[in-house]
Length: 132
Image (cartoon, rainbow, N blue to C red; front, side):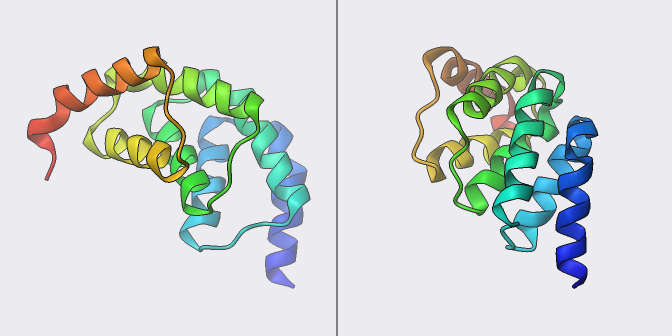
């Protein structure tokens, strides 16, 4: 009952979510290893695509991580928005965000486009000394 109520609430508020709310909600589902129902996931995915251009590095990394953890491939539209966002925020990523984003690409068996790959590669080189 409680889980169903949470899914209904997430679906209802998804159209109004800001980037952090989308990222936190998708991350929470993945952390709990619980795939929401199709309607809730579709609402969250639409929201992710809508706010991707406003996401910060942690938001991008958490959304990408959620997709990979739940083994869900984004729609082409959402994927394109997330890939552009990853390229845009890569220069600001910390080691964890770089690692999580690159892991997500690998886990989803998707190669980033050349620009996104170059941005992530540069970010990885920049933070390599800080990685443990």
